[in-house]
Amino acid sequence: MHVLKTLALLSATSGALAFKVRAFTGENCSGDAKEINVWDNTCRDENVPATKSYRVLAYGAGRQRAAFYEGGDCIGGGRWNDWWADGGSDTFKKDACIDLGFTSKAFGSRSV
Image (cartoon, rainbow, N blue to C red):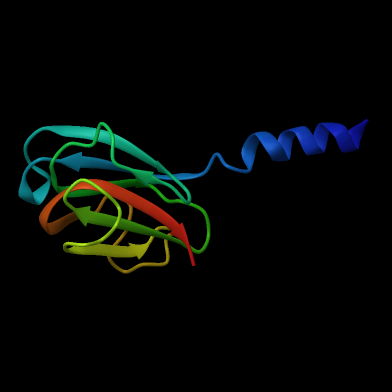
């Protein structure tokens, strides 16, 4: 019985990790803001504002990279930035305001 409870708990939580940011339409974390979750190993390209800066609210799982893509998809044909999303980056830090240097409408997370 304990094994079944443990398996149920693991299956319910295994994909529930995400990094979370507050995305801003202006530089230096100014303008309109919206909180965005990006689940680990996914692309978030819906309901994402035209983002020029963001503030990190929560980290993702270990060995995850957070990527911010110019344009509206996670293909990376234009400019993009990525950092460790698990707290191991000198740039991607909780409560830090990070300017992208371009406008992003797609955020991604991937395992490395």
